[in-house]
Length: 295
Picture 1 (cartoon, one colour):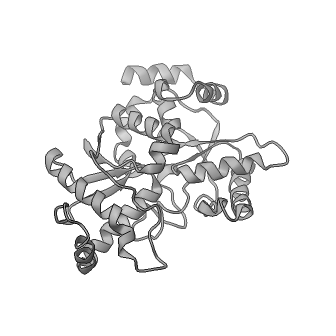
Picture 2: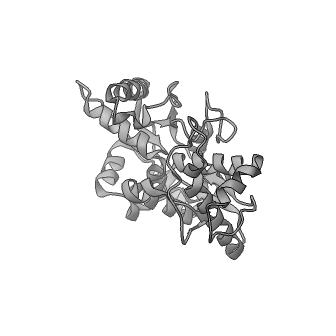
Picture 3: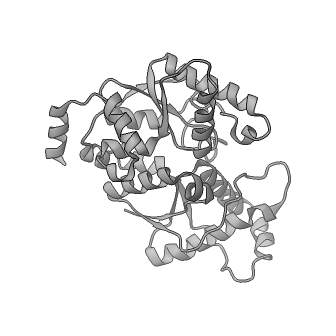
């Protein structure tokens, strides 16, 4: 399976461990993610307050470069791992399809790019992993025992519902994936509540209040690990834990770091994280050996 890959700015700068683990997991299950030769910042936020088409210029150019690459590689799917990038690229792509006059306006500001033909399909890594569940199961060499793992989605991979990967109010795609891999999932009713996002800069108390609710509920229900797919969510949840009066023994990590550990891809994980996994997960060696033979 071959996909085009758009990393985005945050992943390349502040979420290197997310990218490393994601690409390693994909490679392990037979997915070749081909990074675009040239790409722009997506714009980080889809402009809703003002009708400024120029704010979408970076996203449109990226879609055009993906279009060119798609002809060379014979694939139309453009992979993202950052929820914000997924949200912006997917919404811009949808806007261009439904309102071609806006594409005409944006195109008038581009001198070198070819016309966009609406032939790119923006996908998130969760959608890809879900389709490759059989390959994931076949390659697992470590299980997570009875340790509780909670999922936190955040907002932008789910909303608006027209572009989301699952039900925005009660998503289950990641939980279902983990359960199929033998993980003990701890449900959290706040799994899709906003953590506060960029308000960590101007309204940190709002972020701390929201994120505290998310973390404490998962911990109260028995989670030792919270997995997320969003760099900003991960940052906010971790910063919030630092403000707690009492210690909360729960680890915030990327979903793909957990999957990398279960697949035995230790070379893409920090030693400290591996040590944590080895401590918190009680392995059944008979199951591990059986899985190795099957793999």
